[in-house]
Length: 411
Ligand SMILES: [Zn+2]
Image (cartoon, rainbow, N blue to C red; front, side):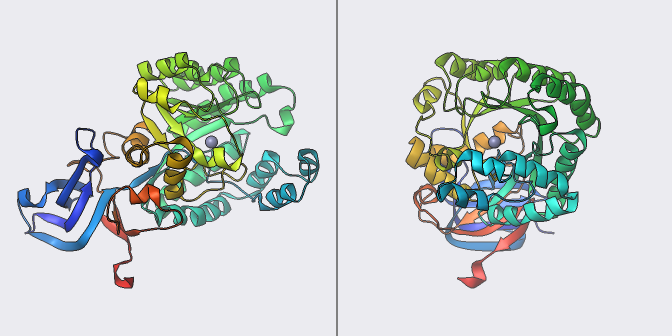
């Protein structure tokens, strides 16, 4: 009888455990898996047994936890490439809106799509992420903007968790934009979200968290607070899109509700940062949207560091402001645009991203007892994951103890 189901040797580990060692690194390490969990990991010299059903010698590759994309809008109908082209050939926002562009076009296409169509189009994008070692994805609703279509989006997100080698955390983002039927009446729409949609979503257990777009072009702090209160009433944790374009005090508000994360955060005051620190709220940075919208106002990275606010990084994959399906590219952008260190960047898509989803007990580091989600990289040192642009050195992906990608034979 083997002691382990699977054993990886001849490898280095970036365990990403917090502590004295950069990357929680273990040179010449070993990882043993059993029953879908990490059973043992550490220096190979200390490995208690090499008796495994399967042994993989990795030829000096690096092993990290499976990557976690903790902020996406990856389930949607239609696409906005035509609009992108129109804008770059000189069309104004008004002309694009008249031609049916903008978020309303995504809402229209998402409403028109069936649940199966939404799953199929999202799975193609998710394949890009899983090829880069992503094993956990957060998916938000927010393009249905009525009860049935929001629930359809969340059901599609749940279905993806059963069809792709990823765990899916779902987030209800009904308060993403005011739908056309409620033009000029955002408070009436928030009534619907709070009184009807959140209870329905909670009743079917379709969402793991509730999010809101607190912004001049989204919802006010008062409207956002109503959504948070309605979520709290259902026992659902909250998170917020705050400070993307202006500071409405969203970080302070979200922290008061014990938010898992505040996301974007280009505009946040030191009071907001301190409130997040006190509440243990993670700052999720979205360099793809910053880049795509050609923003220039940087998030206050040094303030987050001073107050020990955890930093996570995500793709924000969405058709309007971040059509990104590469989390590795986000690592490079976080370092290049936001001046994160490569170690902070990698922690931002592993340990801290797990924290932003309330999953740190089971995911985000290589530690015994955590899910056997791993990525194996053909790299000489972990910094290469942030340094390279457009390369994908991911050789093997393990999800819940099973090898779901293996490029070794193509070497
Ligand atoms: Zn977003």
